[in-house]
Length: 242
Image (cartoon, rainbow, N blue to C red; front, side, top):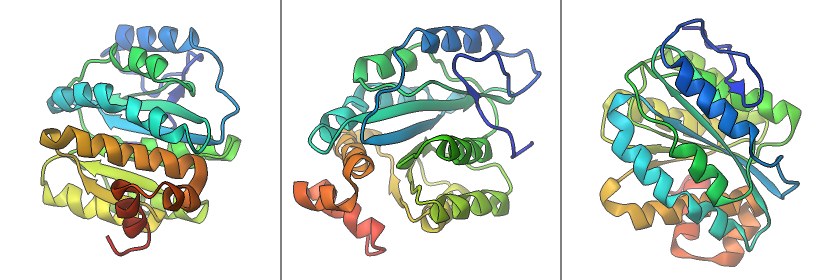
């Protein structure tokens, strides 16, 4: 797998792969993204990346429901712009434009169905680096359950993100030890944080996503000022005490 490729940005006809699988679904996703309003000039830009391989459909559906917490929580600290990135199938990886309301993001997410395939975390990290070079990205959120790539290459990209001030917040479903080790290393090198993604604790997960959004829009001062339990937990993780 090539780790240097970047997800195709919505509104362009660029494809990450020449494979035929899922082309109509990708085209539909891009057409939907084109119809959204341009990215707002908000205070924070956050990339929400989700593993959409076959086993992930229940988690994808849950993420659709709880993503509104990010926009709601960030409201007190500023305006949040979110870009959706997902991968699935044989090299399929796509990114929407940045949106500033929960309905627009949910409309995109509900059009996507999970398909079998290998992980493409390297593409997500590379895309985030390129996006940040164009305009500041305040945080990357990744939700997944597996890692099937060369961990040293992922670590290199995570380190670059850390140097550029783009923390990665990883939410891991399941307890795969390889994924756990890799995700924790990505979090450490990017100066982000790692959490368990528990489908049985949707409310707690939504609140943690909200804390990430508050951080993306206002940084540590915004988390400290809001002072919710999830904010204190996020601060502890960011300071290495979590």
